[in-house]
Image 1 (cartoon, rainbow over the protein chains, first blue to last red):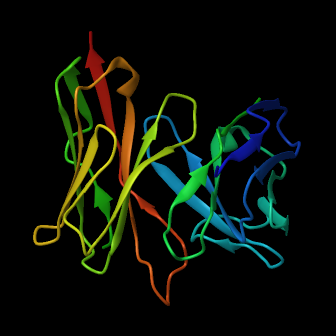
Image 2 (cartoon, rainbow over the protein chains, first blue to last red; image 1 turned 90 degrees about the horizontal axis):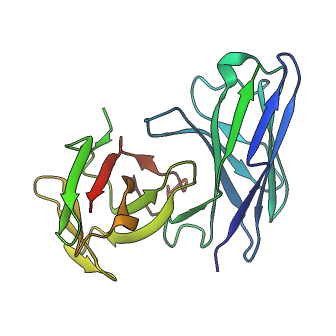
Amino acid sequence: GAVVSQHPSRVICKSGTSVKIECRSLDFQATTMFWYRQFPKQSLMLMATSNEGSKATYEQGVEKDKFLINHASLTLSTLTVTSAHPEDSSFYICSAGGQPWVKNIQYFGAGTRLSVL
Amino acid sequence: GESVGLHLPTLSVQEGDNSIINCAYSNSASDYFIWYKQESGKGPQFIIDIRSNMDKRQGQRVTVLLNKTVKHLSLQIAATQPGDSAVYFCAEARVGSSNTGKLIFGQGTTLQVKP
């Protein structure tokens, strides 16, 4: 149980284009999903908290117009990197929590490697 | 400020030996801790968790120890195997009425297992 699927696993795009990353909870409902960014040999940096049916909550310093998050259902959240630039190249990881606030265990997707040329 | 950090960036152990990975946290309000394992190019995988009302919890080949007095958390891996090679992160959370569900991650320790 507690499987989170993330797609695509790798994407290469041209500068100026937009890229959409999907995060799905396959065997449980996730009212809250989280989006992280991770640079090589560094820890996970929380970008935003995605709540089903409402606007995402962004961490300080994260541009909400740059990183659009949509959480339309209890099993799907998407992150769109708009007008991507080479500095947006990174490893993006989503997670979902299975039991709201009983425990804060988050189950992670496999990540998306974004390379912007 | 609030932080969760790890003492050593890299730990190298011989296959079959026990591994101990350490983590320090600075916020005494933290009441829930999780250890994750991340293999190269993959997302973090849940290993074990512990609440602040406990000081020890055991899983399969893993033990987490919590010392609230010195704000220290450790992960012990028994009989370390090559498949244990990965980066290990501790994460901190605060459950309760003001819980946002967020986790605060430490910087990570790379565990290298020598055959």
